[in-house]
Length: 274
Image (cartoon, rainbow, N blue to C red; front, side, top):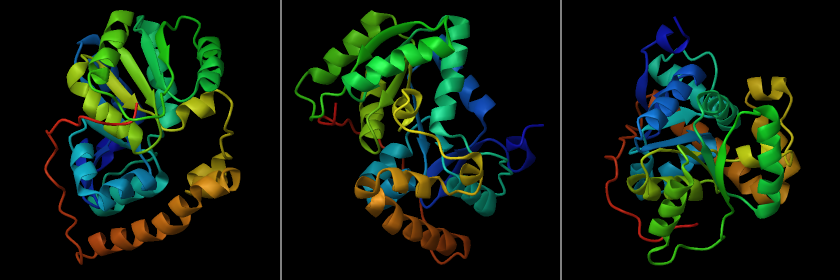
């Protein structure tokens, strides 16, 4: 039995009103690959504390997150929440950069082409050979850097047509949180394939960010590592959001706050970051 099956089993659980899946790497990867094989739209994101708190602070975004097919516990504090609140019995988190590699490895093995969307041209120029070096059989159907602006009328449809014409079966989206989740939500109805919002995976696998030591990851200190690397950009995220997350988690655990999840969103988003 997997660690996931040791508790309440697979499925979505309420973490501060955001529905997060009690899942593991093997199950998450299998669900994504199955959707790719079946030509089925499938929205995926891996949420750490920052990602969960974007939903807490923005009910409309929370509803979008709750419409995702798969939301994995990217950070240890999110895994802890699933275990503490719901007895999920998860032995490990499902970290976005690691999940990315597992999905890409399986895609390469099955001949499922991938499409890389987001980040910058220099990052993508380093990422493509890095992935091909790790997985020589990998088929990269297309690569498209972010425009770093809002979409224009008709642009989402044009992006979808480029992706479909490339022959891709899986799209990896690296636009940063929460832009990548909004992009994934908006593009899912236009594409018959999984879209994975993969956070900093592009930067990590391109060699632009160094992973923290394993002990820091185990004890949920990755935020401290990231803060040290990018203090000016990330200090508000970690210094303000981490205590807010923990206080709300305590309130939900003690029954002081119901943290009712909003219904999954269905409304289209007409303008979003591309």
